[in-house]
Length: 278
Ligand SMILES: *Cc1c(COP(=O)(O)O)cnc(C)c1O
Image 1 (cartoon, protein in one colour):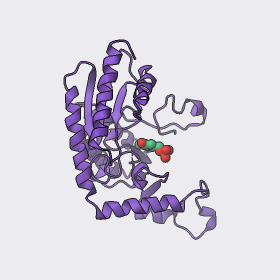
Image 2 (cartoon, rainbow, N blue to C red):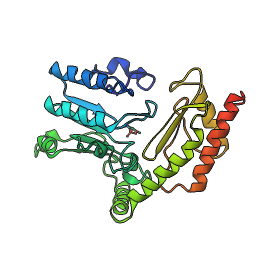
Image 3 (spheres, rainbow, N blue to C red):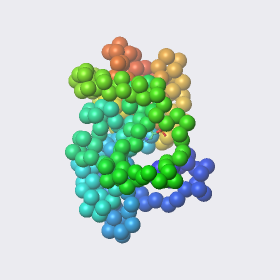
């Protein structure tokens, strides 16, 4: 919570949070500023770790940045012996194409967080992966060094069975081809909004498609978010915009007809908004 952006998500805990240094998001054309900022922090000699969401900032607005930034950040982290922690909770399990988004940058993080897609989204389970070096540093026969917390449902057998079933599918079925097919379907459907003045920032990474409804005041708490969600729900679609940012991250089993229905509803919602009916 301390590492996350300060705002509505963690405001209630503000007095309890510790200070962290933040690098700016690598905005298009200004990626070097991000790298320079990280380099400067590292040069000060007290950076324990860099924690980031690879390729896509999710709840922060589905903001996309190139893999080259990721590999450069990893290079800087390595040079300064800073740990590189990738939060792949959203991007893991093929969301951006390969199994993990870090693969697109040809890097392996020191610590990787995975959850949502671990069970194919079917049951709640998370895993934190780390290098052997980190694992060995914590491995001990001294029971006082046990990780004592959150043990009630740790490695819940039913959730683990779902994760194993998911792994089996990944290892025996053409999952990558399916992910690529969904990627292409999203791309072709997004095209209808190219140049449409009702939207801006039409973007896609892997199977994630996002676009911003053109509104005077955007952001996570934008008034239009809940109204859009209600509009979609009336049409029996679970689409939860981040403020005015509408995104589709469909399950891999989504049908063409359902995708069409979702895009038609987005089109309708934008028309309703422009006509003042939303
Ligand atoms: C959903 C999500 C989380 C939240 O994970 P919890 O296990 O529910 O706390 C963290 N990071 C990213 C990138 C997410 O998409």
